Image (cartoon, rainbow, N blue to C red):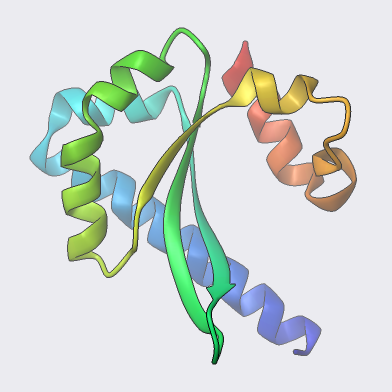
Length: 120
């Protein structure tokens, strides 16, 4: 894959994540308010033989917000499935940032900075 193809895929993922957040906010305003304090990202993985491309929603939030977001997980899953995404995964941003074996800062510095804001 060329660099331009990678950047186009990343832009498409950012647009899809924003669209997911917009749809949630439009149809479920209270859940949308919860997502305002979180970082929503599309995560792409490849699984199986032959490799199949799967995309799912990653919601990174603070430890205080995590139980509230997980309580609304069924709504989030329904919207994700309607958008052609496989699953919704909620993650504790602070735990990910404090993991000593994490290479997130080196691999994706932009995400690392975004999670710094969410984890506070």
